[in-house]
Amino acid sequence: MKLHLQDPFTELLKEQADMIIDRVVAESLAYLKELQMKEERIEYEFKNIDWSSCQDFTIEIGARQIEEYIAVTWEISKCWLHCLDFLYMEELEYNTRYHYRVRWSIPTRRKPIPRATACTYFIIELSKVKPSHFPVEVYFYFESNKLMHRPNHSRFREKWLKNIIQNKILLMETVTF
Image 1 (tube, rainbow, N blue to C red):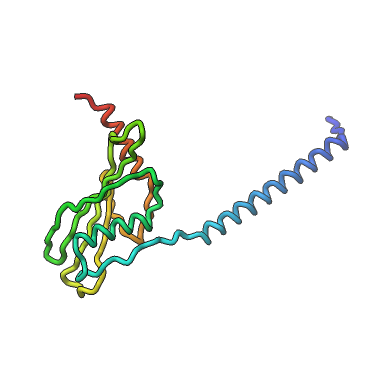
Image 2: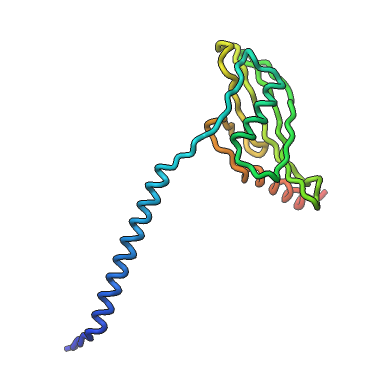
């Protein structure tokens, strides 16, 4: 037969510990619930520009609007430099596509000529079927990924450009000729 002698001080400590644990758990759950409510309230608002109509489109307007779209909607640090080039025009049965390339780099004082660049390709599509006052369709993708993005449907991540450049540099360092 075992006798359990209960120390009043030990019992008091156990009760206080249980109360502290219950309070911490309750406050943690309340905090998580509050965070979840904030996340539900915060929805990213996609920014976009007013793209030109098919009838008003020219190669120069397309280039200017791509520059405007990047400036207005892409959250990118100022260390990035880019140049935009018109590549070619593609005539299809129901539309005409204009292809552009935006080449990105981060020149530094130590390396003014970057070791690698990252490219974003834009396609501006003019429909031959829709009324000519409709706006052009715009798509873009990154050189390492053929996933097509559309303005007002996906959010640009600066990390995508960094990953492309890092992967190119890594490849150059590992490949020997």
